[in-house]
Image (cartoon, rainbow, N blue to C red; front, side, top):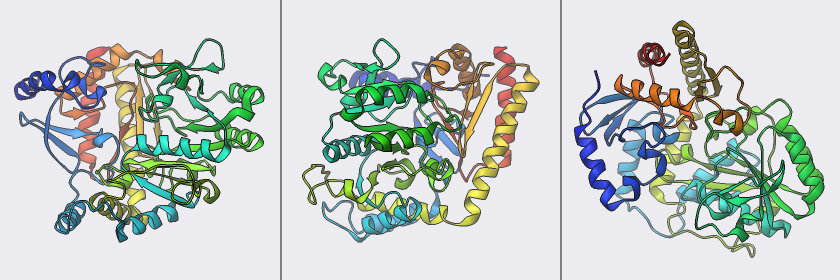
Length: 430
């Protein structure tokens, strides 16, 4: 029986009159899956609760940052205490120094870093730093990797295997897009060719080492190592966008798992503990180009906000305990096996991919190596699956191009309920 979403529908209709599409971020509008979005009233642990009183086991987790679960008591208590001292100063605080030190301990490649307020801010600032350091203008990105909505990053590939890009959004000047080269993910040969052709003009390569914005796509063996080798050869700055994979793929992110040392790293999500935070950093010689040490300008009134720093510090304290990741990985593996088994028993073809605590189910019988492969999967089947799971109290990302996430708060009971719902939903769409 379908859940009652009367209040959510009323709020959505009201929101559409005063907010573009009724939402403050496009994927929330449920365009990819049909129906109306649910409006959330509260969250606790592994659950979220909508305005109609419906309970859901949540695998979106605010798109990744709630790795400890929603409203973790330690985080809430620390935030309440911090808020009593003031919510923003526009001045340095001890908290930002403490969090930066904690991050650098886990990510030694980030020799010097700066806090910002979003992942988009982090990636656009890292690219500016790379351009300022190299004196070059062009950048390379990869299809299916999302790095925020900065103009130069909303670019798709032009005609041909490796070409300068064209804007994917009105409002992005063609002059911006022509400095962005877009290539297929997991195709090292295409990258080598473009570097042989234009390497002296390329400032940086920015990549999600594990793609989290086309589902969950893993790098082929040797791919990231190849990028590292080629970028060094041509003096190109290698930027790992670990806004999503940071602390999710492992405690040290994707770069620890794959043993790659990028020149720069972008973080967000988890290091904010649920509050708006981003960070970018890397080699000291690059980061010393940032003002006031150098001429590359970047600033932000809310950068290093005391509440966000507090949430990040408390989150990393818990994550640093050895038993935390043992539990997280065990839960993630348990969910993986349960969903694979549900699909098998239902007799439906799926491909499940997992990187640490990130995961995705594609409706296909073929391997997914890049965005083109992901786009060929059955998105109509995913939409039906999504709606069925939502009606059974399971909240997944409302797009087949998004990853799901596991938290410390999820229980075996949650996973068992999810598996039962998945089996029933798989059978419904078969």
